[in-house]
Length: 527
Picture 1 (cartoon, rainbow, N blue to C red):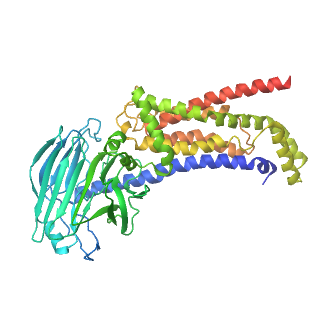
Picture 2 (cartoon, rainbow, N blue to C red):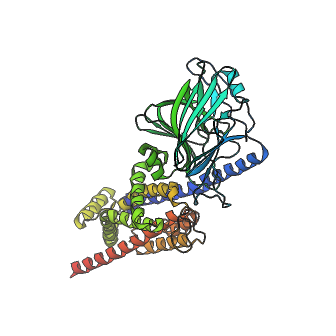
Picture 3 (cartoon, rainbow, N blue to C red):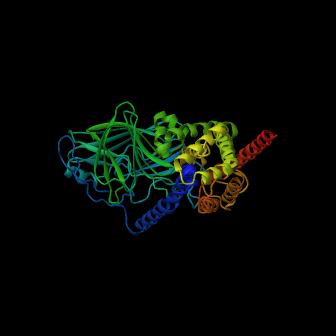
């Protein structure tokens, strides 16, 4: 290690680590995760075209009576026995008593062909499918039609009831629904003759137009903890007890079953691609509520505040959740999500300004001390211990902190990741315009204007920020970062790129101001 690295090495390593974390995060998202998601989507399209749905096989379920059952392979049912229209959606029930399809009615929920979004693909496990513990009875249940008390229900204004009855040789299965205008339902399911069964919330919504973020399953336990399993990560069956809700989700949508008064027991089972499927152990009867639709914060909160946890923010939930609450609060006054992001960015910069000020001033001091640091290095080039002591004395005398410039960067990592998760997962941004050419903040900038502006401001920020690096290779790497970041941000949602662009603008303003303040102080001190 050369003498400069000995004294300033820790600072440089921290800066490099910070930058590498950003680069790795972005690169992993778009060079690893996104191609995998696209590959999965293409494979799903092929499967949908080549074969009809086979009900996923349930393997060796063991419940209290120790009776195992394997569900038969069943051809996809398209016989709709009941259609329920609410204010928010159209729910279709098939002849096996399952939610066959949910069509979203609100204007902004459209796919890439401008059709109202349908949440389920043709080859997936459907919500409210029942699996009996008795194998013979289970096989029969997939061959006998369910009878609905009404074929068409209008729940757009008032709640409405529906009863589904499936009469089998050994039992009668009854599902009693209450549908509400907001799209959710209450359900009571029971079987006669002590026949025990499982019921599922189904595989996650499968909206092919949305390729960002993680897909999978999330459950909330009685102790308030959350457990998330991403698609492809469940290798073996897993039993969970004391469950408040179970949700299978994609970027924007969820199919969730919940009961906050009486906890549930759930068996998680992998499908043939190791994607998680949840089967609720119902015994001979169970009641719960359910919802299949957008993960809209206000809608979920109106059902039950605990359902907000259906929105998965990952590791930085503790920052992301209050950040979204603030974002939503601001939007209530501003009315435009784009300008709300701008205001939120400014507020974050204001809150972090004291620390940024100290960090920037520290970098300025280190820049001014560079000649003296070189003198010390030359004077004690053969005595590293004395060189270190002299450096520390120099820092102390001039009030410089070699780590001071790193702290603002380090603090921005969780803030950036948190707001990344907020803006990626906020369905409220879907179809939300900002100005001029930005018609959807949830999609990439179609003209790449924001990413280019973001890269340009990052370049300017570099130019006016004091640089104490002596290593030429490190300098060249940092000079390339605006190009690297611009490339990755080309595909980022416009809302996230807008945040980073505005963040850069205010960082430039702060740095310019601090540069002038420091220059005036330096001039005054030399008089």
